[in-house]
Amino acid sequence: MAKLTKQLGLPDVFSIAAGAMISSGLFILPALAYSKAGPAVILSYLIASLIILPSVLSKAELATAMPRAGGTYFFVERSFGSFFGLFTGFAGWFSLALKSAFAIVGMALIIETIFDKQFNEIHFKAISVTCCVIFTVLNIVSVKHASKLQIVLVAILLLTLSIFIFFGIGATKTYRYSNFMDKGWLAIFSTAGLVFVSYGGLTKVASVGEEVKNPGRNIPLGMILAWFVVTLLYIAVVTITIGVFDKQELVAVVNGTEQIQTNLPISDAASKFMGLPGFIMLSIAAIAAFVTTANGGILAASRCPMAMSRDGLLPPALAHINHKFKTPHLSIILTAGFMIAALVFLDIESLVKTASTLMILLFILDNASVIIMRESKIQSYRPQFKSPLYPYVHIIALLGYGFLIIDMGKIPLLITVGFFVFSIAWYYLYASSRVSRASAAMHIVERVTSKDLKTVTLENELRDILIERDEIIEDRFDKLIKECKILDIEGRKTAEQVFKTISKILEKRLDVNEYVLFEKFLKREEEGGTVVQPGLAIPHIVIEGQHKFDVLLVRARNGIKFAHTSDPVSIMFVLAGTKDERNYHLRALMAIAQIAQEKHFEHRWLSARDTETIRNIILLSTRTRDMKE
Image (cartoon, rainbow, N blue to C red; front, side, top):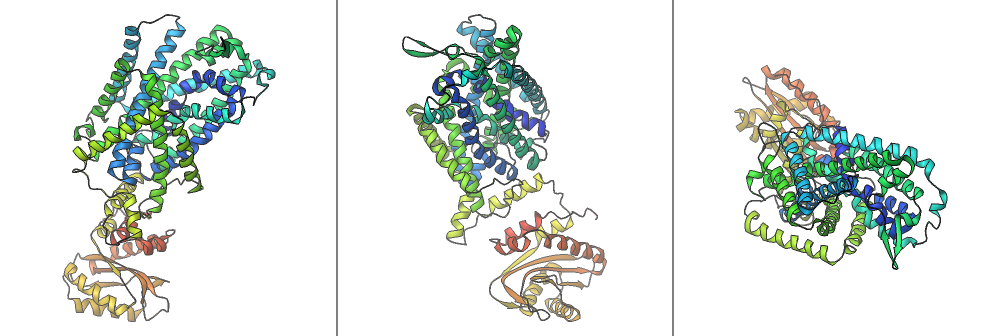
């Protein structure tokens, strides 16, 4: 499988996450939100920020455990299985691509407002398609260049909004916040649901997790930092905007109905205390905001079909990585093609609510995936960041998002059902014969049913992901562990009984008579016990010949009785090698000592569900790798 290049650092992660949030939710939506909640819309923005937090934490955990292209698609596919992964992939791709297309439309609308010109439909669509093509080319040529643009634009946005806040504080009037709660808590919470989508783009950065350097640190830190900074900006900017406008300047009553008086409330607010330069500055910032949303959206959305293609759910061509640019160019082109078609042929505004519904559904699946992965007890699921207050935060999030979806209305729900039906058809017509992965949910089934179910595929895949994530370079000991025999002994045994079994196995592997091996193990025990600490023994012998060395692992939950100790042994590392391997013999003992000292090592060893899981525990150890030959 062709891998994407790791070239995104913390500034890139922060900029993609922050840029995805600062768009219409800040520059266009506040006036509409004010009409519904009054000055208490400030609380609505704060509540919406808190509602998104469980998904931020959940996605940060999943992304540090599985930093792979596709984000939510990959997490759900590995948690629930291929069918739910397929639905998530289609829904996530559609939602992100459509949101990005809508950002381009918003950018064209702002350009129209700034220049005070009425574009006809052809001009309007031409501008939108041209912008989409520019972003597409940028994403194909270089992820790094695309993210550099993102960093620059986000920096401009943060600086501009900081200037707005600095000069705006003195222009606010306290009387404009009077009757703060007049419309009541119901209106506040309802408006929180409206502005919730303003924060929705935050988690899309997980889709490019495979391209992030040091994902265990940079993904959660970048996401949480973006959430914190943008939340402060939203609340501060909305507070100032309300404080510089009289109510009728934002919402006026015309013929008995309330009508929004400004399409660019933040820009118009800036003109109140900074004049025309303020209006122009904030309008340019609004354009930059829509550019970051559109550019980041193409970057993230294009990784969904690529990830689905890798897994056999879509045609393999979409997973192809361009040799020159190291980007999934076909997947980017497909995403851009869909966006252009939406810009030209569809009424995008009517579909944005559907995209929001799908986005909330994806948040539900993110939180559910954390629960599934944790409860599966897969040893190689080792996130470097763990979502706090598990599982209470996640269960509350599931319930809260469920209410938000119900509030979205009939049409979005029907379109969502249509996606589900399409996913069923595609799965059975194309994908079902091409995939056979076992999900984390199957591991839970195994825990409560038959232990004979074999579902090691996911465990081994997660192991390989962690090896890549932690940049573990395989040494000779790892190679031995990959090939070694592992005994999982049932019932209570004596050391002599176990040594007989070990000797039979090593006879074939080392070409040494089993009785000779057995005698050497017994003699080694007589010379000095090999139990190095309670529960752990390292029997090691020297054999005849040259260039021979082998490792054998033993797990005995009920314990092995050794003559020189009263404590039963449940963990054994057995070493056997020729005299010319004496130096490596000592280095192998050092590797074992480091492994045995790891936190929770004994618990992981004893709770491992099978021998392959035991093997993965050793391969994923954080010991210092010995690169000497």
